[in-house]
Image (tube, rainbow, N blue to C red; front, side):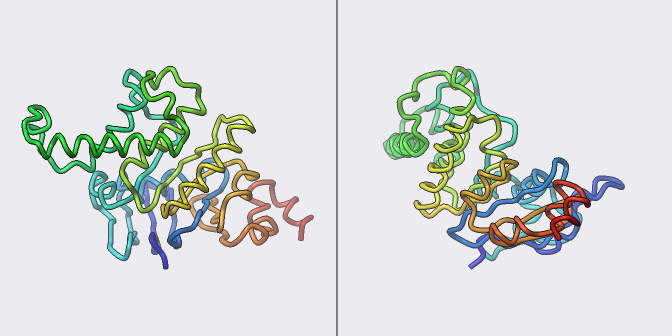
Length: 259
């Protein structure tokens, strides 16, 4: 069953067609990868899914309900979490506080109650959100860093902290935009194991990544974008042997030689 579905999705910025007539389904409980050369439209597609952009045409549905044109905060509340290609942490806050910011989007109290902390149920919910934040830090192996400033973390741990903050939304699907970027081989191996653990908790994973070894080692299915168009989709071997994919990455001569 598809948890996320894109139907003929197109977006134009003036005369530029950044994403063109893309059809894509992400099956519930899977790890789906989206790959393609730089400028292929991958992050733009994530921005369309999460409401940062609205499609010029086509539709996007999540759990069978249309979300195209829905405000970003409502899409997040509906169960779509994400990270970004460029790390966006609150570097002057602690690791725990960064995750709590994500967790508080689940809160049901109003601002006055939160500031005054007079209501017992507000205090009870605060405790529940703190427990949730700690669980998310445990999921990404950052519990021991909880009270350090996030800006002091090594790069790879900052990446994992962004994932923890997205998990604090309790999403049904998490979109990871180049989660392995800048990581060394050991960090990538740990990240791969972590993403598999996230999937085991019931969260569907949809990721954009340039590291083909990483993608091939973790994904159930792979879709390929080139110049905003989907040129291929399938399992590892289908993608590895597809002439259009080879041409997009290596040039037409390589595709002809492979054929």
